Amino acid sequence: MENFRFKLKQTTPNRVLVADDDPVMRHLVTTIIKQRECEAVVANDGREAYRILQTDSQFRAAIIDMTMPFLEGLDLIRYMRSERRLMRIPIMMISAKQDIKLMTSSFSAGATAFLPKPFTSEQLQSAIRMLLGNGSSARRAA
Figure 1 (cartoon, rainbow, N blue to C red):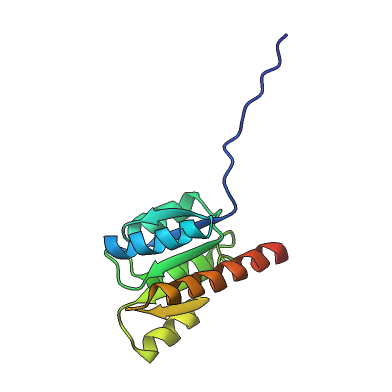
Figure 2 (cartoon, one colour):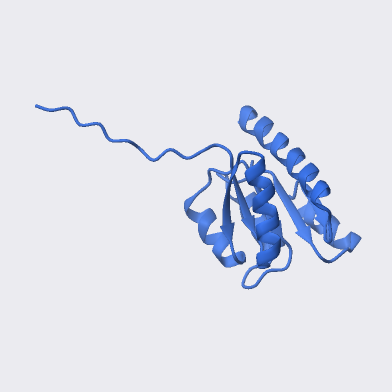
């Protein structure tokens, strides 16, 4: 009898969920994520991000826009923090709204970092570096 080996689909531990309805912003964020040798999993709106998270929890980090169609970023963060399999994923909220109450709400909901738009490429790179650093330590502690 011949032995058959099935190759299981391997998922890289360096996957980052990017949820933003702005195609330019998605492109900028995913480009920087790829420079960090990570895979970007892209959602065009909050509902799509929610659907991805329902079936996939293997993310090193998530970068979520505050204002998206169908499901706001804060609601998405609250969902992630309520699900045991998602609660350790570090989350960065990005927003064009520069309001201290919004930033406070983001942290209260469970965001790890907050980056107001507009931001420079260097600011985004630094924030992603910090976020991915938190992701690796959170994974080791799990």
